[in-house]
Image 1 (cartoon, rainbow, N blue to C red):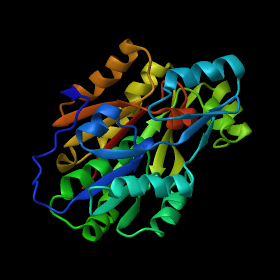
Image 2: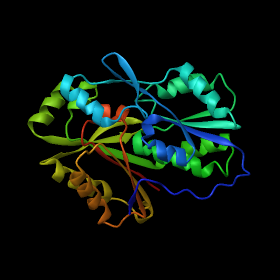
Image 3: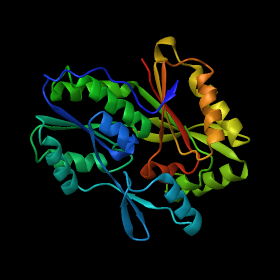
Image 4: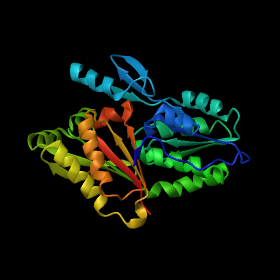
Length: 294
């Protein structure tokens, strides 16, 4: 079953009040974040010298349209320390503490800026997720589940351990956006384009690394990527899968989801659209899977 909402057990209203917050690059919809009472701080997307909140002001479609027309890749800008400080103060209102899930420190200054702000306040604990998108979503949801049983310090320590279990990767249809964003060399860009290579991008130790390369139509590459990614899973790793994507074509998206569903591996499959800040680097039709390895 594919759904947009993840089930969380009933909360114990008598437990210590911990506010769970996250950087917007965890890519949950505003509706999901509200449902789980997760506070979200946006990053910025800069287009033509104008800054827009990536969450929820601008969506991936507008970003791709802008690049198509201008051939300029929008810049992504993290919230600054003062903005984080104000955000954390707002989170503390009505709560005893805050546990914040930050985008990987290797990919952005979100974590650094959040730490600067947290050090000026009491009872604010920042966790480097060492991942992005659906991986950060899984970590944030684990925080929501466990905050009823742990105090803030123990919850932070638990998340440090839990993040090591999260596995995530993407496949991109084009490396053009990675190249424009400085995450892919010119030589690699021209080589991949000339040979019609669609590489997978693995998130490992907080960094993006090139994984297996696929050739052929993107439909075929999607099928092979999913097959290869799920092939080595153990039985006890087939619980929850998060799909994060920027596929506009419903037929292509449904095809990809069917490749996952027909294996009948997972109890729950959740899908979310990649936000603008992440889509800036993945480009149109990027497709990623995130899961918890035991």
